[in-house]
Image (cartoon, protein in one colour):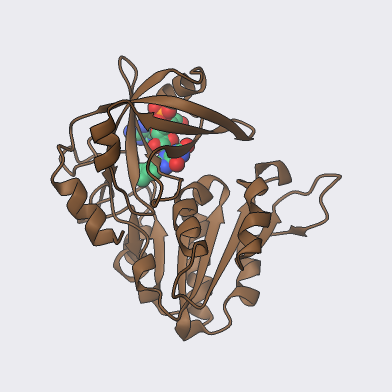
Length: 286
Ligand SMILES: Cc1cc2nc3c(=O)[nH]c(=O)nc-3n(C[C@H](O)[C@H](O)[C@H](O)COP(=O)(O)OP(=O)(O)OC[C@H]3O[C@@H](n4cnc5c(N)ncnc54)[C@H](O)[C@@H]3O)c2cc1C
């Protein structure tokens, strides 16, 4: 499904309505990070639900609150939906106490997708810092299934080797031609891979700057560094897309919590073209 189709599917639904879902599996990914596979209880909701890679859901625990969480499963298989979550606060800590079979509520999908329907004959370079890879996994799975793009690279950096996300998937991704490269800030005894910033991996991945689309998600300083390094190598700012994370509440551009200059990250983002936001990214605490 294209991004346009997903947006259209969503526009007919009530964005305020939360739907009941059950946890069908929980996978421990890295310390404090788990992937929850959810299935809608109502078959009609399950059948109607569509999303595009890069969009997010609001996960709702009644009496506790809601949190925006990227959908990290394959958009072509919506019988269940995966969300990879780090326990950092009210909702995510409560989620970490749930077990398989427990119910949660969910509304969505929201937000702009990664532009993977516009990458024909191009090299697609995903760059992810830490949990940022969760927002890209749906796009990686989509392109890995077969796409008209020329190549797919995944450059993933984590603080420590144990923080590399979806490590169990890398062999499968490589098996379908995805170039997966990793680096860590701090090695441990068993680590024989690269140490250093993820920006150092760009040199090998950007072979034809004019034909490269770069998709980046991670902490703001890392994204600015990656975007500027890619542009310095000749990638057009039009072809650099960042997924922003801001505190948000309504997810439908009403409450203003995620306002980012003239933009609402929940509606206009989270995926935004770098040339639209480069100046805003320099404003501290915006
Ligand atoms: C589009 C999008 C996609 C996301 N995808 C994921 C994902 O896939 N996985 C994931 O784990 N997280 C994801 N997040 C981040 C997640 O939504 C936040 O971490 C969320 O705050 C967690 O909710 P909580 O109730 O558990 O934590 P909170 O209780 O909200 O606390 C989280 C942290 O944020 C701080 N904080 C909370 N509210 C504010 C505020 N108004 N101003 C400043 N600081 C504040 C808290 O002090 C705490 O340090 C995403 C966010 C966005 C916007």
